[in-house]
Image (cartoon, rainbow, N blue to C red; front, side, top):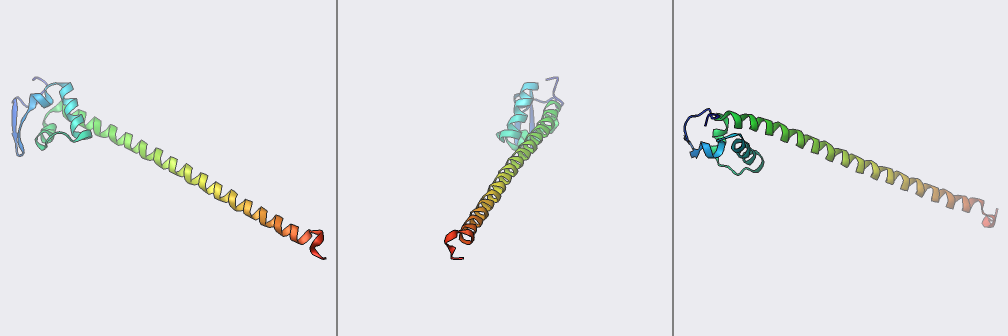
Amino acid sequence: SAMLLLQEEYQSTATGTIDLWYNFGDIFRAFHTALDIFLFGSKGDAVESALLEVWPARYIAVVLQVLVQIVLLNLLIAKLSDAYAKIKASSLLASNFQQAILLIEYEILARVIFSPRSGR
């Protein structure tokens, strides 16, 4: 366990004892544990508190937090853009509908005023 900052196999925390090798033994286990904590929330509080003690997991956690925030911000921007496009299309549709109603009203008014049977 040369990658671990802590030289113990087990660490006792306020919320319990954790097996550091099982959770953070190498880079792949550290990545898996950080992924479980930040994306799925499937690890306990003791493992989450030990995350800051092990350097590969700490860096992986920071990278995951940044990536998740970037992905979520891009998703939010895409959703807002899509919503704006729908609102714009709905507004254009309502405007065209109002113009069509005005044209129909003008046509009816013109027929009433200029029809040869109007008695004028």
